[in-house]
Length: 290
Image (cartoon, rainbow, N blue to C red):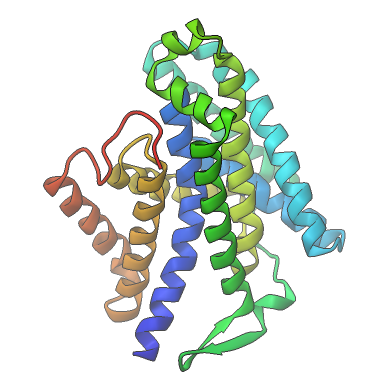
């Protein structure tokens, strides 16, 4: 039982990392109707920012968290203006090529600046442990869990209770009607990309200390996030969260009880099974929901 709980905790940690990318992917698709294949590389950029500020410059952990979130929100605004805005309303493959090109530029830019060698960014919380129910868990993994719960709850409150959140949901349901009633659709697009990048940053500063940082890390992340969003339903934030956790736990259990070589086969096999039973995803697809 202790081993099982340990695997589940590891899976939740990985799932939270996938969710930080998948939520942004789902938000952008739900509001702007663009599939952002550079979302995984936003996580990579945030991870390198964490490396620079925390490991290289020695800034306090809390200050680095705030700084990374702010800088990545600004990154999201710039990304929307330069990469996405010019192709809005164009055919889908131009949008796909635009975000893929941005992902390649970000990846190679990171390789040019920091090189290809993986960088470790551990915090003291990685090596400090607490016993829960007979098994040990590091404080950093607890931080990941707390950050995930708080950020998901805050996002739910924002979308359901605030004027901006309701405006985002309105734009996701009907852009033309939203324009008629006075909602600035372009501002909502900027806000969506800022939110998606900030969420990627929040996930990065929590999860990055447990793993290495390298320029190519965004590629596998976007594949897993895309799979999680597919399971949950495109545009459904709640679906992105549950799909990511399902994928993370499935991978952890496959690694622990079968083999790490088969973790992707088992995890994606579960996804295929879900889609056979419910092709539209667990929560449907289209408008933003949570």
